[in-house]
Amino acid sequence: MNPRGYSLLNDADPQLRRVVLEVRFSRSGAFYSRFGKILDVLAETRPDWFFNPDTKNGLAGNFVCVSSGMDASIGETRITVNLSPKPDLAPYDKDEIHEFAAECDFLADIYMNNVQPAERTRIGFRQFYESDFDSEDLANQWVLSLGVVPFSPGVAEAFGGNVTDLNFQMVIDSGTYRTRLAVESGNKEALLDRGDTVATVRSHMLSKKQKETLLEAERKSAWVRRRRSASATIDIDSYIESPTDDVLTGEFIKTHFRTAFTSFSDAVQKANK
Image (cartoon, rainbow, N blue to C red; front, side, top):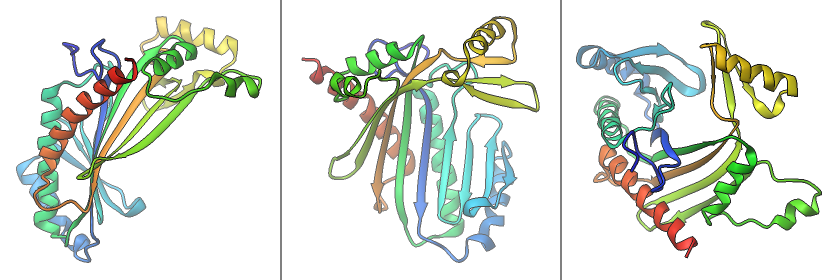
């Protein structure tokens, strides 16, 4: 395990950079009349969660936690809690994931106690493990070296070109839960941060001169934040449809955090025997 954070494989690559929890509920006609109570509870017990109204897409509001960096959306039929990549892209460690699980427990309990929906219709915990590379070829080679992505070089040859992006996914039914596993590689984005304005560019869309200029700006300017030019991502989404009452939000996160780590590592070892 990487001492700075959690890595999916023993070679400390890729690293856990983002996690998301989503809990869906049956529709409750009382949601909007009781949403004010949720705001009151947060203001009284957790003033570090700040409210940002947003009525788009059925959301009653977005929240940002200034002490942890988490953000959440609470709507009529779902709660989404997100732990975004850190500014320095350092991986999240076990303690941080357990803190995330506790916060999700807290928010889910507030929703259940005040809105009182008839049932939960889905719970899902999604983990994004990333690795950065200096080129698309290196990213693709690493993904293929795992042995879990079926690939035939003849396909690219038949089309008269080279593979630039790989994208593969499957859904695995384990009986009590399901896992959607996705493995992909591709270009990285660069962020041009000028205070109130942030522009996002993708390296494969730049001209040769623009790429050279971006590399030079990265060396000289603090407002250019750029990862390597390509990446590989392992996206693991563990979920249960219509979970029973004994499926606790925080425990679900901690259990499947451990399960994902061991299961994917085992899969890679078996694929390379």
